[in-house]
Image (cartoon, rainbow, N blue to C red; front, side, top):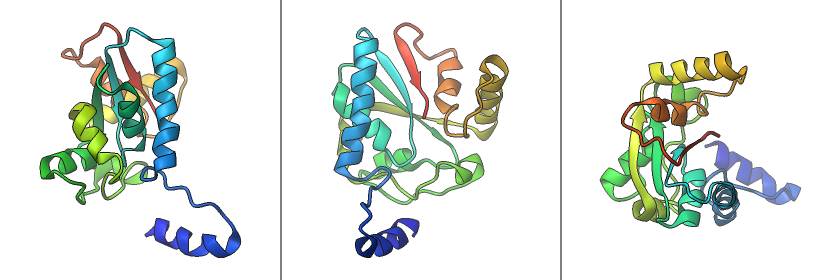
Length: 172
């Protein structure tokens, strides 16, 4: 709804409409994050990426194109990519819990979806309690306060069954 309202007002005002996650330029821009990670960590084998609408993970997955394992991390209360992958296409997902205030589009983008199907190994859902604990850990250890979207990859990384060598958790 907000996107539609913004689009209605921009043509007359001369503003450039840039979608947060479902526009080719957005995915290309997010792909540069993958390029930077690749340059800094050329031996990376696993990358954990927070998902909302999918622009970030779509761009990064397109950059790596299977050269690194891409694992999506999203809140249980906003399983947009999980629902889309199960349905075989972007579909509306519920929005509940902690995700509702910072990371809760109705669905993933149409442009990134085929990229995710091809290059995202799996989706891991994390609970609100785990997100809050990771947020507190970031603040306690690093005096680093972020919105509730940022700690999700840390939640997954801190769990015992995540590969720990050459793994990076990308925060947003």
